[in-house]
Length: 369
Image (tube, rainbow, N blue to C red; front, top):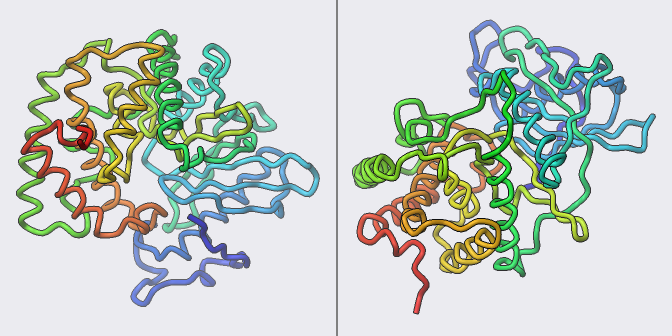
């Protein structure tokens, strides 16, 4: 989704665009600021970081996305090579967690032949820099830089083929994850039940999402408890639980000729391997062709490694787990591109899925006759 860019850089905080009731002398949290002000502040951080890589502070910046992080394409007049800068959301990852992510991406390309963005070191050899915040409006943020990758998202006119390729690629990624020698400082998010919907949710409480009425809340509470029970029975054996991408959908693939690259490892962490299947249909879970897309994904995955019948039977549970986790994300990220696009209708669709899941879990993946 394209985002309009604020071209003029403010001279000071006094020039920022505040909504009525926002004052410079009050303790305002970044997430409380309007979108335009957030973008201005994020650009300041990005420009401040450019010098760490020997890039001019006046380099061209184009916002590519605003989600957990702000991602920019950087075009420098002194170089024909475009790069991508990522300004991290504060409090989401530690420095070691970011280092772990970059290490895994490098290992996937080096050891498994899975093409991923490769981080670029600073002039001093660091891969992650820390930029101090601007007074009380901006917390300290991590920033990293990658080579720009040419490519486009897989063609939606070939969805079943694209999902088959995605399943095959996901199986290769899981195979590598099971054998990867993790660094001593390994640290990543945990996407178990508590990390998704329970006591320590990474994306906040799903109950605070927009569009939930009392009836929907009651329905989803029952769904959450059902998911918890089923996952406890399913277990966390090493054959079904480990390091996952956690957002491996078509939007995070780039095709360039015969090359397919996997991008956006920001959410990678520990979780059930089937969570990557559920992530593949993020935001489209209510489409009538989901059973066909899931079948195509499974067909590709099975070319590399197969799934047990117990795993296949639990696919609907992971679809609901992911959908409710996304509901929490929308509630806690109101200014993110996808959250704005989805709106309150996402809650209605989630309730519809939950109703079907409680009635007959397999109805979520059952092909229509």
